[in-house]
Length: 143
Image (cartoon, rainbow, N blue to C red; front, side):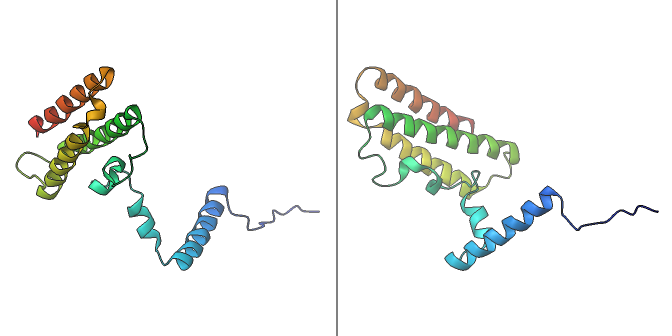
């Protein structure tokens, strides 16, 4: 008697996951009218856009306490800082991307305006605000 291997056609885990994911994304795109590429670009964390800074969205911070507001603004400042660092690694001084530079300046200006709130005039928040403003200004001295 001779034993023979039988191939059952069971895909490995990655192939099975990829297949199920593609079916899931196809179903979502049919329901919402979006494509898979739209979803990728929409949730790309490195997209440089003011729209990706949550603190700049109108009405987002109305019901927050001052300490929550400043933390929210500081997280956006860190995101802006990471964009600028990535930008400096990708481009040399001679080949600057003017659209990204304009976005950086606009975002920084808006963050500064948010930090110029009377809620941040008390105690520890005042020093955090001053520190954040200094860091934002230093970012642009390097560009």
